[in-house]
Amino acid sequence: MPDEKHPSGGRRREGRELALKLLYREELTGIQEGSIPGLDEARERALVFSTALVEGVREHLTEIDKAIAAASEHWEIGRMGAVDRTILRIGVFELLFLPDNPVAVVINEAVGIARKYSSDECGRFVNGVLDHIAREARGGECATSS
Image 1 (tube, rainbow, N blue to C red):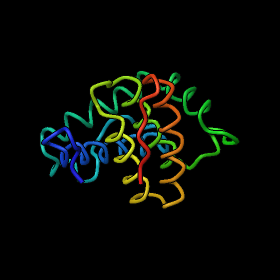
Image 2: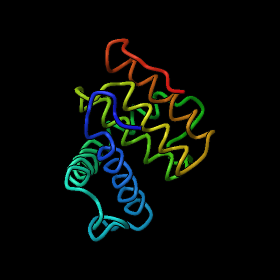
Image 3: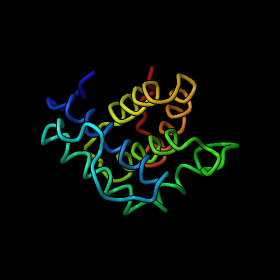
């Protein structure tokens, strides 16, 4: 599903998925460089967007994790699955540091990626956490995903 306000929505989805793969691998292995599966086929815009997401999450990790911890009741960040935690980190980075990205798009994309790479239950959890953070960070602006 393309981003509503971005004609390159498919490339942005690719970028988000590439960022997920890189950050997930990094969390499990500690390796920050090297190839990503499917990277050679990625379009330039997806690669640029993915790189911005990865670098942004790395740079603001402490602040991102604090926001996730505050918004996720009864869940410690370290007890979340690595995929779920990484999806949340990307979404929170977009909500906090990329204000031109519409809340509805950020949440819908994160939920879709969660359902693809984790589970429907994760999708609901990601939706709730990101919606909470969006309300706090964007002055009440929110958009509940399907």
